[in-house]
Length: 57
Image (cartoon, rainbow, N blue to C red):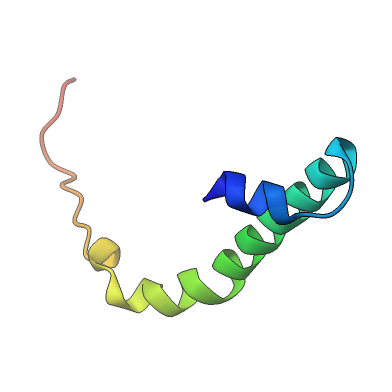
């Protein structure tokens, strides 16, 4: 998949590297702004219980 994307990007190696970096940053931005906030209520990570009793000491 990555080689297909690399072959279809315009320019020389430096231009392709810059475009690839921008694409990765764009995907990360979209994930943090839209996908993760949408998926958060669907995930069970907010049901965490911590036991304050016991331990060493």
